[in-house]
Image 1 (cartoon, rainbow, N blue to C red):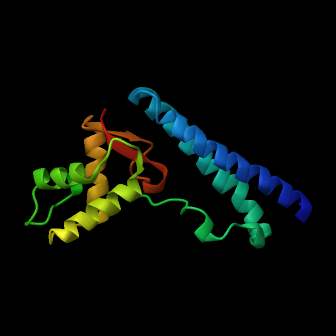
Image 2: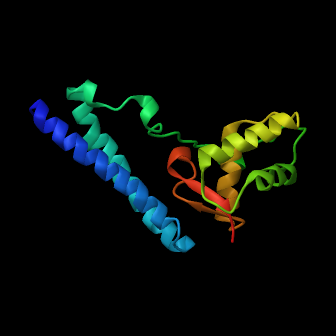
Length: 165
């Protein structure tokens, strides 16, 4: 592929990337069952766009890749599940839930942002906990319909949570 072709294709793909982000926000307004179905498909499309279309262009023309500071990290995946978690002796499940609900709002927020808010609140309270534990708890809360979540909550930068209406 010639450079001028790569530039044109890259520009269109980045437009598509931004459009998919807007679609994600539209999907967030759907009911939970629809959000889950559409969110999973959208995640697959975004992953294909990043891995199979944009990355080959950046491999050939590295200077076309936007600076990392101009775009969110591609992925942060947490594979820890709640049944694998051992909370610190100084913290109970109920206490963790109370902290999560104290910082959560009824507006959509990236899972990564919520993990950070909960980590900050735990530090203020003198409690030590890992971000992966918080993410695992957010997933349980979403799966049990205590909060709303969109996307795969294990992927912190491609999922969002909020308080139920």
